Length: 159
Image (cartoon, rainbow, N blue to C red; front, side, top):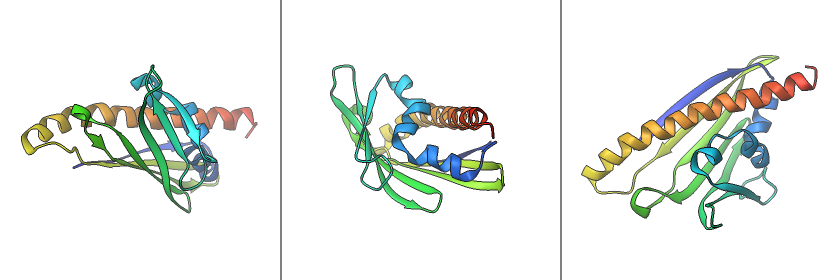
């Protein structure tokens, strides 16, 4: 099992940060994943409620994965992914975002990741090590890009 939590402090109110985590159109504005994978993304549904999802397509337009909002509780949104993993196996990782107020104008953004690699034990261990390094680096970059996105919008609004 791959599992970790990454956090970053953001100079904006928790509600602003949560909106950027929840709104699937905004997620694609700051996420590191489209560039890292070369996929294009589109949103199905309203992009803000359970069942809405981001669809990932390769350069040929073939669907390579989905990220579906499963639950929203307070300032916490859980997403279930379904994508092609190693050796063409389907993976279903969970990515949860949460915004916690630090004070009126600052918050902490958290990204929790959990996934199992559906491969035999020996191969699973090798693939998991490489995937963990790659995916975790992208999750850290995601949070840095979320911070930049929210803080720049916050400054542009004169807050």
